[in-house]
Image (cartoon, rainbow, N blue to C red; front, side, top):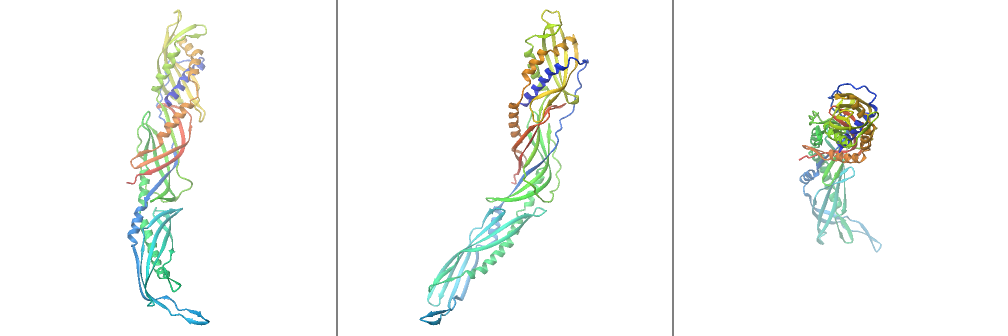
Length: 493
């Protein structure tokens, strides 16, 4: 599609050039061939790099470290109810202390991990079964159950060496205090369990940071860093286009917990370069730099996609337009009706950022009084378009030479004939919005979901603009500059 677009503009140039060329002195030589290549300036992008850690490993480690049976209780001769004074018919009577034998077991349920804002929440459900035996020699046994929940709110941070650090806030509360009713009073056993619960909290405080360190986040971050020194294929052929990514710094912007995954938000500042042709060599990787805080949201991608037309593919397009026009004669001042036959068309890049178009043709009058004249007329011009515009015109228009010719004056008048320029100009001077929309779709497909090894880039385009059309020896080049959002995902398997 883009070839048709740029080819059309070259045809326009070939016709429009003739309008201004008649007063130029033609030389007997073709324009020089340019050999310069297309160079795309590097861009600076901040690519989002989410690092995913499986919290299932942390959960399994906590399950191993914290036993199911937390503690047992076996306390004979305990004061189940303290002595107190009661008023009976105006007389103060002191009730006896009520002794009992307290036994029981406290167990935990499954440890749950969840996310709450910037906190990783570890929940430890606890169930207590407490029995009071031989209560004052009156009751044989009473059973009480209770439930508590221990919650650890973990706030993570990373050191400059990318190692995780945890700040913990651990608390617990009884959702159902263990106790029994005896002689109209409530006997609770909460205080007996509290001391033990404090021991469980202390153990959790020791275990959590050590297990977080075993996630080895720094190894995954280092792999992400090293894998990003690569080249990504943006377009497979016609022409092949590559984006080379060279990371420069890595910043940390917090984390989120999604289900059983801990996702670190990283932003990679990288230089992105576009190459046309063969795959460029991967840049040399550098050691993982120290952690620094992320400023602003990650994922801002800047890129340049070169849309390149091969000059050889433009030649048949121009030839077709000229052959269609030759069906009607050209009316030349002082010469009358002249019929032209168009032959080979040659297109290439010449010096000064110009295009050279050589048109071989012959011309003669119907009555045979003029001609036949034949040869190749060389036209040159510079493609011009406004920023973000798909309407193309040409400056510095000239006929640079006539080669292999007989009757060169007739050829020059044919080249400058208003009928030729008006016909081709009217047919091909157009705004290419429709083709541009198709081009945007191609660019979107080109940069999305590109994989190289473990490295996958997912991108979405927010804005695309066309730059200035340029003619080089390698081809006719329309830079398409874009901004969007990009995320790098690493397959850590």
